[in-house]
Every structure is written in C-alpha cells, then in structure tokens.
Amino acid sequence: MNADAIRGHLDGMLLAVLEEGPLHGYGIIEALHRRSGGTLDLPTGTVYPALRRLERAGWIDGSWSTVGGRKRRTYTLSRSGRGELARRRSEWIRFSGVVGSVLGGAT
Amino acid sequence: MTAGPVDTVTDTLARSLRGPHRARREMVREVRDGLGDATEAYQATGLSPAEAERRAVADFGDPQQVAGELQAELTARYGRRTAALMAVAFPGLVLLWDLLWALDPTPDGRALEPHAALLARAVDLLSLAAAGGSLVVAATLWLGARRGSRPELVTRGAGLLAFGTLAAVGGTSVLLNVLSGADRADATYDSPLAVVVAATTGCVACWLAVSGHRCLRLGRPRDRQRTS
Image (cartoon, helix red, strand yellow):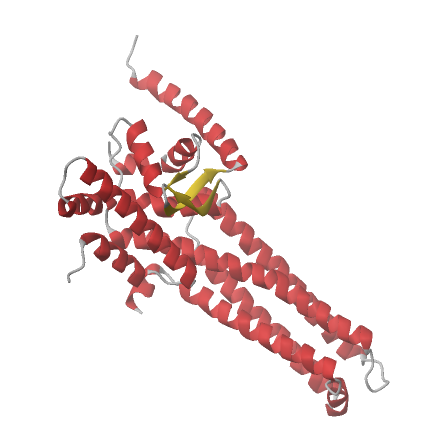
C-alpha cells in the first residue's frame, strides 16, 4: 500500500494500536504491520517523529521503562487520545461508507 | 572498525539534530533501540546479522527526512520551554520588584514622580502582556501538534517575544532610572536586598536572551538551517 496514502491516516492508526496497551517504538511498528496483514509499506523511521508529535498533542504519554530487561521508550494512550481515536474512528466509518457506496458501482 | 548501517543512520541523526542535548540524545537512542529490535526480528527469521541490519535500515527510510521531522519536534519542544520560562519569569520579576518596593517603598523618603510611576506601570504591563503572549505561543504549539502543522514559525515567534519584551522592559527600566535622577537611583540600589533583586533580574534576563536566541535559530526555515 502506497506510503503517501497512509500518511494522512498515520496518527489514527498509531492511536489505534496503542489502544491494546503500552508499546515501544518497534512494538508499534510491528503492531501496524501485523494489523495490516503485512500490507502497510511505510518507512518505519516516520513513526518516531509522529509519536513525539502525538505526545506533544497530549494524545499519548511517553516514558522510559524496562521491557524484557531492556530500557525502552514506551507509549501509552492518554484519556484525550482515547477520545480522539473514537472521533477519528467514527469519521473514518462515515467517510469509507460514503466513498465505498460511490466507488462500489451502480446496483 | 567500520560503522554498520545502523550506526550510519544514528550518526546522521545525531549530526543533523539541533536543540536541547538530552532530548536529542533520547530521540537518537530511541531510534537506535528500534533499529536494534528490527535487526533482531530479521535475524530470528534466519537472516545473517549483516543482512538483517541492512534490511532494518532499508525499512527505516531516508534518515535525513526523519531527522527533519524529529527536528520539528525538538524545535516545538524548545519553543514550549521558552514560552513556559517567559510565563513564569516575567510576572515573577514584576512580583520581585513589587516586593522590594513594598518592603522599602521610598528609599530616600520621596514618592515617585508621576512620569516615573507611569513608566513603572508600563514595565509591569509589558511583562504581564509578554506572559500572556507566551501562553498563546504554548497553546499554538499544542494545537499545531494536533493539526500536524510545522512549529518553526511559532518557535521563532517565541524568540521574538522574548527579545522584544527584554528590549522594551529593559529600555523602559533604564529610562525610569535616568528620569528618576542619579541620587534616587543610588538610594534605590543602596540596600543589599535591592542588589540581590537586580542581580536576579540580570540573570533571568540573560537566561531569557539565550532561550530567545535559540528559538530564533531553531525557528529558521529548514533550508537555511542546513546551509549555516
């Protein structure tokens, strides 16, 4: 899947994978890959600045913690992040429904 | 010993990033950890260590582009830090000087001339306006993160606000001292408490000037940052 097409939805997808629980950078990249069935073709480097921006927005909280005996920067979805995820999710359902009904062809 | 692909990426990031040292170091470390995890994951699929590292770095994308995006976060962080400093420092200095005048209102027994009182009031108002402006800067950076807009211009605004306020408050204070006359100025700075307050003001002003200068530097357009 094209990276430019994904970029506009990256924030929502990052919030969605953090809904499952706290994850570190590579854990998030792995979760994106797994949940997309391996079809997301996004340069993994773009995830790190996006996480920092979401943290600045107050939607996620980042802190250093020990994961599997190693220190890792771990991110957690904040309360306002949950609200934002719910908003983006309902917007996406509405948008994909409209586009799908048009692109789906005449019935 | 030659640097591996992961070292090349992290060295590129470390060389490209500007801003608070600790934040820079943490960002580079986070990327290094992530690339290390990705390398291990590829190795677990049966790839050789060298090939696993090469694949992890290939997945990462262009390090210069990532550096540009991380730099935006460092720039925003510094702008927010400077805004927080201004929001506390400017009203803090007003309170400090008010406290000094409350403890020793007329060092030589004379009340302030009306024009001097007006200038003193102007210093207070400028300081409080700057504190208000810095809250606007912080809120704009926060909203910018939500909208995905670049923080350079706002951070530059924080630097201009710091320098503008320092110049305006400093100039008005100098004028206040000049118009009050040398005898009053001497009497004002006669007490040890006044010297401490003046020294504190000087230190805070220097801190604000350094922060403002860094904001202006970090807030420069990206192409000009690369060429300087």
